[in-house]
Every structure is written in C-alpha cells, then in structure tokens.
Image (cartoon, rainbow over all chains, first blue to last red; front, side, top):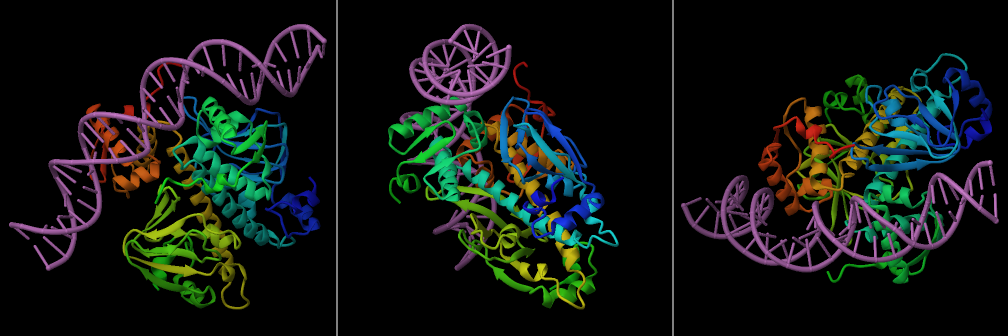
Length: 229
Length: 229
DNA sequence: TTCCTTTCGTGGTAATGACAACATATCTTC
DNA sequence: GAAGATATGTTGTCATTACCACGAAAGGAA
C-alpha cells in the first residue's frame, strides 16, 4: 500500500497521504494479484468491493451466450472500477472485470466508507465526495462509449472514437489502449470488417496506423459531413 | 416545492421533509417549466445544475450531424438528470436533455451541495451520500443501454431490452416509456426495420404488442439460444 | 363529424457489415 | 534462430438492415 500513489488517484485526491495510511484499516483495505486473463469479478457477483488498479489494467466487458464480447471500458493504474455495483448492494453485476495484464488491485469496502467511524478519520466525507466525482466521470465515459457506437457505419464509429481520443491526447498522433480485437469489441463491430475499413480509410488518406498508434492525416476526419442538409 | 415529494426521490431519500424545506435556500433550489419538445440543456452546455423531474418526463439524447438521434435514457417524475455534468464542472455536455412531455423541473446547485455550510443544515452529507447512489444507479442504467445495443441483430436487441424490462416489472405484460421511433433510437436501429422485426416476432409467437404495451408470449424469449455450442 | 398531424406497418432495393477461411506478420519462448 | 502462438490483413459470400416511399391507422383540434 503506497499512500503517495493513492493520493494521486481520483478516489483519494486531496487527502493527505498520512490520513490515507490511517484510513487503511478502517476502510478495509485489501490487495490481491491477478494474472493476465484472470477475472477479478464475474457476471452475477454481488456485494463487491470497490476496485482500484495499482498496476496492470482491468477491462470491463460483457460476454453473452452467443460469444459476443462487449467492452465497456478499460481502466489503468490509479483507475477505479466496480464502484457502481459496490454502491448498489443488491444489484448483481452484468459484466465481468478481467485483468488484461498482470495486475495488482486494491479493494475498498464501501460499507466502511459510508459508515462514518467516530474518532480519527474525519476523512470519510472526503472519500465520499471523491466517489461522486469518480462515478460522474465514469458516467460520462459510458456515455461516450454509447456515442462511439451510435453511428451505423464502422467508419462513423471510428471517427467518433478516434477524433475524441485525439482531442483528449491533444495531438494528431495517438495511441489507444486496445488491440484490433479489443477495438472491435469496444466499437461493437467485427474485427475483420474493422481491419477492412481501416485499410479503406488509409487509402482515402484519412489516417495511418501501425499497431495501436494512429495518426490522423486529415482534418476531414472531423469534417466528414453528410451529403447536403 | 413539495418537501414530501422530494423526500421520496432518490436524491433526498432518508431526509426529513422539514430539513428539506430548510435546505431549499442553501442548496439554491430553482424551478422552471418546459413545454413538450423544448430543451432543458443542449450539447455544449457547461456548469449545469442537477435536474430533478417534478412532473412530466425528460429524455437524454444525442443528435449528430447526420440527423441520427440516440436516446441514452428517459427520466420520469422524481428522477434526476445531468448530475454527472453538474459534478464535472469543465465537461461540456455531449447530449441534450429534452422535455418529451410538458414538464416541471427543480434545479439544485451542486457547488452548494458540496460546500458544506456552517450552521443549520448538517444534511449536506446525506445529500452527497445519496448523490453517490443516484450516480451509481445511472451508471448501471447506461451499462444496460450498452448491453441492449450489443447484439448485432434487431431481434437480439429487442430480447435484451424487453426481457429485462419484463423482469423489472415482474410480469410478462409490460409497458414501455417509448413509442416506436423512440424505441428504435434507444436500440440504435431503424424504425421501419424495427416494426418489421416486431411483426416477424409476433408471427413467430414470441410476443404481442399494441402501442407501448408488450406481452411476452414465450419463455423462449429468454432462452433463444445459439445453434449449438 | 372532418381535417390535419403524427404514428405505425409494409414493400422493394441497395449497401453495409458479419462470418468464415486463409495468408502474412509479429511476438514469445525456448 | 526456430517454432509455436497470437495478432493482423485480405478476400468472397450471404444475411441483415438501412433507406426510401407509401398507405393505413390513430389521435387531436376545430
């Protein structure tokens, strides 16, 4: 447990590392390792704890009976996951949380967060406040993922995702946290069809890509407009 | 302003109506009416207030340049909206909030919620705590909307949405808050194609529907399985 | 009632993308 | 470096669905 590291996460932002150390016991801190490919949580799990990625990466995904995988998001070091289900005790999880790299995860017991304890740690309120921020941001991320998949064409979805990512990274060159299959699962399209479309877009001079590094070639990416109206 | 009504909303649950009345000023309560079809918030708006639907209904939607509308959700009386953006001061809204009925909305200033004021209203913390719940639930709703659109076929999407809704309403007969066009925009499909598929499913004996009332005819709706595996 | 608006179902056509099958490339591990 | 595994690009076929256009039905207002 590294209070300094935690102080830089959204959940503990603004809290003194010393206080974090003090909270460790009364918030029920617990750590565990997960090898690449293993599940932290599975669909149907209830009464889960908040997860904080200390190292590695955890992917939130859904796998239906047809074998279709939907990636809702991916969270890296410092990121928080499962907080929504942790806060809704009776809601069984509808998704899996899977380590996509060897990962170490810190768990926090929400009930202990909410149940303000008497003496030393008057910091509970700060954590709860931060929890609102974390949850709100996650909300916005989910909305983005919805908008990224709202176009009915693969190209439209790529444009939505890549142009926002470029904006976020403040550059026309960007790297994404996904390989092709993951990107396809995030955008809700077939992988080979995605490769095909990427090829077309290269030929059309819209972008370049090698592995997970993309370069937006043309401002037209954003301006790709409908025929008339 | 009806404290009794508010005490039954998620945001003010567990708070004494008297205390709610007392908070009215220090939380910056403000009410406004919106005729059917008018916008409460528009894409790009920043520094918005939390909205609570007192009467009517507000729909969260996105309209892109191609004229494609995506419905992220719809919130009825007692429901809360825009809380995520309210909690992320610099995030411009990516969606519109539109009144789909004549509606009355109560606004709450988040900054005043967070900035605990000195004397009488020690209830701020309760509201913040409730805010976590509200946000978490919204999170789960958004995840559901993502899963509802994860199938690549219209039928799959309908099954996902309807079977959950039936489960929620605890009956094989259910009414949905959408007309056909809205349902299509929620599921991310074409309206006429949706009508067509509904017709097929009726013929297949899976369901019946008249207007916004649906009846699940067969348990197969949930069991509709892949060929083999 | 009648007129007008909105909602909903149907048909046909074209296009998009899913799916499968394969080739190439890249990475890992020994 | 060789060999296996994994990731990516390519091709072709077929099913699904978007899109357009229309008519029927339902709802509202005068």
